[in-house]
Length: 523
Image (cartoon, rainbow, N blue to C red):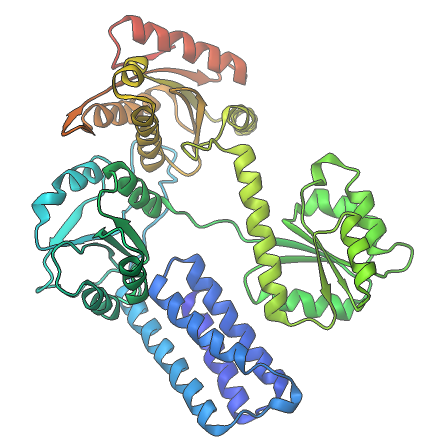
């Protein structure tokens, strides 16, 4: 469900309440508003999310119960005005977003990259001071348009705004004007004095991220690249186990309105099979069911290692605090008392899933680069090889190693070395497809697998990345230095399993190293 449809559903729900001001219609309006606000947050539409969140707070303050509706006319008119102001901002946003950035290329030929970048504007009275920042961003394909405070043009896209506050007589007013003119943009403020009140004022005025004076260039580059690289996550998945079809339907509808995929189950004895097949991010368990209570089901689930960390939320009319605490001790993570507020249900479910996914991500990904870790890289490679075997398609594997990396750590220090590792990770993520496997294999060595690409195609793509990496001027103490990497490529089906591919690619990587480095060899 996209933004125009969510906006339409919200306005329709509001009109229904205005025509028939009953509590249940206000609940429907609040659910639709929460649905829209969460959507805007997930899409990083910062200004719109801020406006939606403010309206949501107004609505929640009026939630009440059957006795508090209809709400008084002056309050109703104020809410109506806020809603239509949000709707106007959405219309402006949709008008400026007629084109959207596609994912990394999905073509079988890895030589074509159609990925678009965010539009970046730099607003400053002295752009020359920030030329090193723009140079660094340029190495990763991010181009910056320079503008001064006096002449900001209109734009058909939603720019990411880098705002230099140095030398401004009233920085707070300037940020506030930028936020008013660009309500949907993310605003990064630079050169903010390291003072609590000044930072607070910049954030209050509409800045999303502040970098105090003296922040290292690498930290600013990291933040901008991470914002540019943010990807949509898969929809949340929830398994509801409740012997009441009516209760399951109500829960399912409340969650699906927020884009959550829901599967319901009335027989708790079938929960293990459902967990295996549906692979949910969270389990909602009714406390009292025939044949099996929710606590008994949770205890059975926790006997299986693969389900030890999945969040379990109990649903019950039980109000005895002692029983609730015992239920949590025996395998649960949260307790929701029926009847529940649908907005509160969604908030609990989403917060639990976000923490669960963050934990799972930390298990599968390298903490420094965000790439797959060693174990996960090999697991994903084995799965990709089996898929290529079934489809009769090629697959290429590359092992990449940064040249003379020990010398970098010895000369410039480990923090600079970490920054180099991040920079090659960003370059690989930017230039390769979402379907490609990119992992940090260990230290300064990386594993890259390209399903659907033969060795020649893989060599063309990786050699362009090699050339671009060698041109990056890494800043250090007022100067800079440059580096290169070497790589070895091996192909499936010539090498027909994961370990053989890795060994073959590793062998030719060291041939590339012995041959002078800064080159790629093919097995």
